[in-house]
Image (cartoon, rainbow, N blue to C red; front, side, top):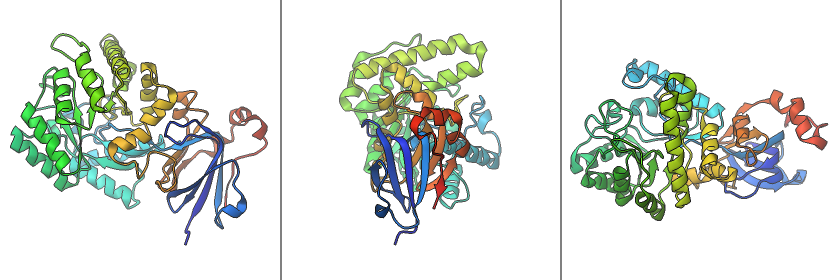
Length: 427
């Protein structure tokens, strides 16, 4: 028995697979899942009784977005650990709740957290599942596994030696981690070394092997070529950051490591926008971070030319990167050489596949969860449209619906012959 049904009608429909946009597309949602996809207006007889219709004038309907690299426990206000995490747990819980709401409002319906406090993250996920809070579907690693005193050690994931590494992965699985985040090199944590591996080859192999043995994917933070080569050799499932060619004195792309990534078909999450947001927020540091952004883009261009696949992630929470930053990240990936549609795929179906969620979300396809957004305009022509979210649906429930924007004169003028029709939400 059908308990609820909604028909979403849009000027254009992008299914997230890379296929061309469908004009005058419509999607039938039943009980939280995608039931049917139509070209044009479906016959009334084909729709369930009491089906409500939502007209999205001047908008593109597309899958909900996935930002594959965020830190929900961090405030995205320039404050970095340890000061950023020195507040009581209740305050950090409030920060996490706010970040989840901002992400969902921006059209991000699935949000993998790349490292935080397990208790805070699991409480937030449960509150969202129970309907006590609005937020995306959370995919959690819990604490990042790092060496003693290593990058992000403050979250509690320190492990040393191959046996210690395996034990920590088992503890993460016991806690309920969906995947394992491994800190392969130093990073922004004071006292850590960005240009050398944190773990030995034996430790890295043990970490990835144990994650896979426990049916978890292994995601590796890496900022230097040697730790990236380690991760590739160990069989990592994803590598974080495009700036992973940092040396003691300079950043120099290593084509051999780049080829190994491409040959192993390991996707990279470049997090290019981190520098962009620091530049915008801290003019005094512009020269340093402009140089960093230029290097990161050059590395990403070289990786792209070697056939490396990208997924979209922002490092939201860290420094100044907001939880509504995915559009900026996609624009930078477009500068790297990906087409607009390839950028959309990187933030939808490919991201879902990398996370092991392709049978749940990431595309507009029958039987998948009804995670969809509507954006004003054509993101396959201009990625800036992704910043103009006018509707957010997660698991069939509408969390955002901007009727004023959909009825604006600019939208009505854009769609021309349909300008006499106003949006409606009706049973």
